[in-house]
Length: 376
Image (cartoon, rainbow, N blue to C red; front, side, top):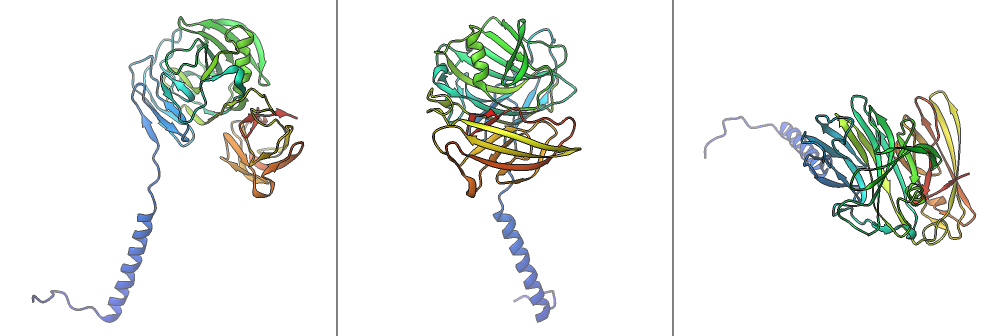
């Protein structure tokens, strides 16, 4: 046997070395047992898409330009990670990168209840939180698609566009036909056609960064104006951006959409009726909010979840009597074990403390377990 070229180790040194090797093996095992962080998914194909939250589709939808564009899907939404080039501002936009619930050109989101007939929808609560940039020309647009048939492909008859923000010398299709109050907010109303479908647009007079609302409030406007009928179908709801110039960095921070069917209206088969009282104590840079959720229906509401969008610049720092997540944007308050049920005619109260920047405003709307609530 060939002798070792190194002198033998003493027992104490061998013991120390063994302890070191054991510690290193333990650390290695811990790293091996920890799964790698889930990376965001980037889609650059012209009409490529991916799924977020297990139920919504994020689509690149680069339909109006040959310049490169990429969307990066996040856990709750997406960001426009590349948006090269520009098109004339007096024409169509470059694209419509967006996230949607429903069906778009045969691409249907997992588990969607759309298409659904309008007469059978009691409410369609949705929440959206946007992130904007200043070096681009674009709108932040929420699209609602309606058709006489339950189609899952092609262009629908009527498109409702909600312009949450408008940056640059752009305007909706058609002309302004007046103003309206929808969902408790004031809007410019535009109406026209693009050669393939009718377009009814609601333009916010100033930027909205986050909002919880009932899609059916806008659908009823289209019906009242003769651009849809109650026997038509809601086929998809979509939230994203129409960029004309640049657009990198535009973000949908979070998105949620549900459709309650059954035709019973609030309190009937379509879902529980609810009312929310939201009171605040505000000081420079901070505030507390006290929220009371009342069940005005005839059946108990179990495992309640209240969804709302905190205005831009606001963030939750602590909460009581409910668990709030995430801390900003589209927030959901979830009941705790001791207050998980709201009996008919009863209520539950929770609160939270937060910080804010800029002017302080309250959330625009609330939905309880997917059903839009009235404000007390």
